[in-house]
Length: 170
Image (cartoon, rainbow, N blue to C red; front, side, top):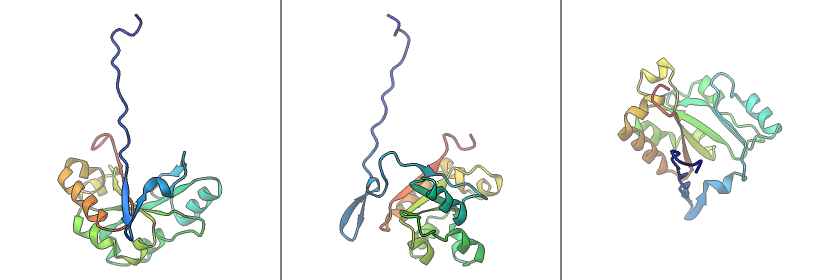
């Protein structure tokens, strides 16, 4: 037969992701339509105006540029500008990056972060400036720290997603 030598692979079934909000279960699929079109975060491009345009042209979900959890403490104008939400951004998603689980935990109570519906963690950026500080894709080389970051965010009431790469620098 022509199938000899081929290996069959099974696709893993997606895990049901459930969050609790006010005692109620919330599945991330409840926030997004089936066949959701998502604008991935683009450094230098995903400002409020671009995200708003993408929503106007059919994106179901847009994600902010990555925001430093350490930078949230400084309340800089630049960080605040990255976290503005357009009127048509519902649901809304903020992408955070950093390396300290405690800072991610504190970010949950930050006024600007609290305004978003979904929190995404950047574990995919290979840029030297980010990677060199143990952030972005460097977290893939430290699975215990990566898991601690997700655990810290799951203490909140928002769905948490992770952007990652196939490899640490690939």
